[in-house]
Image (cartoon, rainbow, N blue to C red; front, side):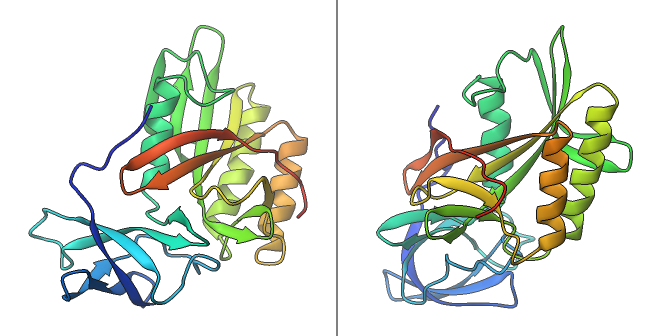
Length: 234
């Protein structure tokens, strides 16, 4: 199932990213604009000044910026950097039974709480209930897609709660949406957040499932590619 952008995207070149949430872009028409960057991480391995980028137009009078930064071309391929995309595609594709291992649910809901955490997706059928946390992956190192690209206390909390979900008898899943196609294996970024890496390995050993799912990002939309192997260490 191909997911398209609601409006045609605007092409330009990245001038610079700054203050985490802002990026200056030189559009093809010669205008320089400031776009909102949804990615609060370091964006290591997907930042290159002068690289081709695409922005989406925002029809919200309350927004200070008229554009949202969607993707950047790195190594002749697109990397999706909009962190809202993974939740959107995960929700749609779980309903459509596109993601291997997450088929067969008659009810799929967003933002459901368990204990002291709120998870992105809750799915259920006659046999099981399943809590799913969705993460956006853009960090590349050699053939590896890595997460996170910055220390994440919130991510550690989600893993601890997913262990509780599993211990309570329900299914617990970490779904990593990888918004680039130049990687073949997924692993935790132990050099960036060793605590998260250790917790992910522990959670996996206790039955929390890890599903790394790769997507192809382009100006035409987002297309599912498939799962890639999970390796405990890169």
